Image (cartoon, rainbow, N blue to C red):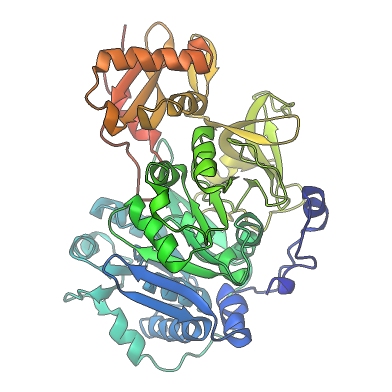
Amino acid sequence: MLERFLNQTTFTSQEDFIKNFHVDVPENFNFGYDVVDAWAKEAPDKVALCWTNDHGVHHDFTFRELKDYTDRTASYFQTLGIGHGDMVMLILKRRYEFWFSIIALHKIGAVAIPATHWLTGKDIVYRNNAAGIKAIVCAGEDIILNHVKEILPQSPTVQKIISVGPIVPNGFEDFRKGVLQAPPFVKPEHPNRNDDISLMYFTSGTTGEPKMVAHDFIYPLGHIATGCYWHNLHENSLHLTVADTGWGKAVWGKLYGQWIAGATIFVYDHEKFHPADILRMIQDYRITSLCAPPTVFRFLIREDLTQYDLSSLEYCTIAGEALNPAVYETFRQMTGIKLMEGFGQTGTTLTIATFPWMQSKPGSMGVPNPEYEVDLLKTDGTSAAANEQGQIVIRTTKGKPVGLFKEYYRNPELTREVWHDNIYYTGDVAWKDEDGYYWFIGRIDDVIKSSGYRIGPFEVESALMTHPAVVECAVTGVPDEIRGQVVKATIVLSKDYRDVDKEILIKTLQNHVKQVTAPNKYPRVIEFVDELPKPISGKIRRVEIRDKDNQKPRQK
């Protein structure tokens, strides 16, 4: 499959990768036809999707079956009046109907808008009206169905609401019945052009309403580097990415690059995260490759790994937030596997990564993906030298990279704000060492300015994570009349420290940070919580902590 898109498919060094990696983009590329259906023709009996849930139900779908189901689903959508350019929201959790639906929408040239089931009715109304959503396909569960139905009077563009079951209330189309009864699929004569919108995500910033990140039809090709050369997948791989389908990480790790590589995607459909369950999945299904955010690995290493047979596991990657070196080292000691870090955004594909031929540096994101011309810009607009901080930017003088987003939909002003003069500004701050490895500092909004010093939250979090009392932590700045801001640590304690005197523990943790990092970076404020705010993707939402603290009276 790779030979369809690359002249050279194997690489032995980063120099080789930079020099020879180039994606050949076909005219009018469509992932549904050019990858899924191509595999169905080339290897029809190869398992594409290995799906199981927390009730013990299991399904394997071959590429032949996947083509059949996605054709049927595409035909069904056509009978509902869905076609080229129509916006369709998918609230499908980890249900296998997500894969049927998103590929079917690609095949008819419609726009898929994955969304998390955590959305409230207000959230759904905003998305419906902002994007002009025509149909919603959702999991048939009471809370989701109720939210979807109650917002219809406020969502004039929504013409169809569809449930995949098990519950299909009055007013909802029956997905399963419709797919079974759909007429034979007839491929549209011209389903899409390369620059048509195929996929869109709503992504929240620190202020304002969520932005609509629109991707074109060639976006999946940008994930060749993700699946083939970061996840290091091959045709015998069974890959698990821990992510809900409502988040961008799902198409990073549960769809595009994985099937281009010919790997089998493993999906564990579960309601509540239990690290022991993930370990059991790896053991029982002989999973070979795992990708998850640091939060997941932090919980995995607190389990007794000797109770599980993890011998099938060959490769592990990590993304979603910065990796604390302590997690890297502990996992390596317990399994012998190095965690290979990567970095990117909803608006990009893999941008910076540690590739298989490289020596990993614990805590470093790695080096730029040659698809992107990455630089670090200081506030004066000049490039940062080694060991200097700067904002991560992508230069687009040579044209838009394959994996970079098309635009913020219906918001040209915001698009120009972050992407102008042939530079896309990511909003993330990092520094680069003498070897060219990038090290994450934080979002521009997360950097703490205290008494004239700029403090990156990640280095304080890394210091805290080396103390056995800390399971998870988030470092933010809180308002202070004298210093502007002071460092605050919001901490989830390990069970062995929950009954310790909190005043003594605060002093202990503050002294620990002073010893591990610079004395001025210690957290002057420490709050202990049962859990940190984060969506099902596992990424800690520091903005929620900041918003809460900013509403409090300023400290003196």
